[in-house]
Amino acid sequence: MPVDRAIQETKKTGGEKTMPRILSDEPCEVTFDDNIAGGKIKIRYRMPTTEERIKYSNSQVNRSGRKIESIIGDTRQKFGKIILAGITDGDFMKAGNKPLSSNEASPNYDAGWKEIVAKYAPDVIAMLAMHVFENALILGDGNDEQEDEDPT
Image 1: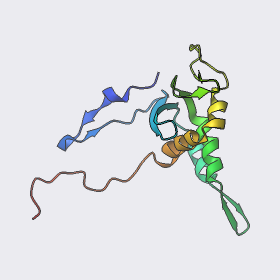
Image 2: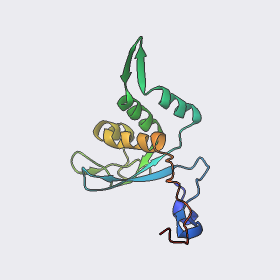
Image 3: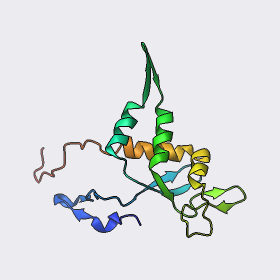
Image 4: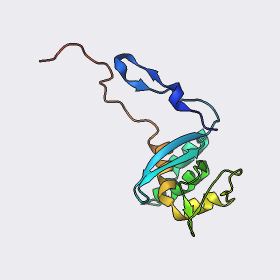
């Protein structure tokens, strides 16, 4: 079961809410807005290993002599699929309006769920890879402290 990050929420000075990074082997969750279906999709994934992060970075381009070719799309598909750990029941439907599940206890479970998602929703796989491998950290704007005085 994924770590419930909501109960881990703490408050910083100035009222800004933050959540600590959970350091464990528990699956993580991310929710994406699905502009194709018009809803939200919740994905479970595992954190990549250090070796996978290095391979991801090194796999973004092909170099052959002086020619450099971007293969970031292939890299996102490969590594996004590797870390994908589960989908939420009801977020995906197979042909014939049948729900798809990654939960073995669900009546909608399909052992090939990961292949089905990778084949028909590569945008979800790519977005997962971008979220985990490329956008895990962003720089703050440097204005984390609130000033009491009016600068004017």
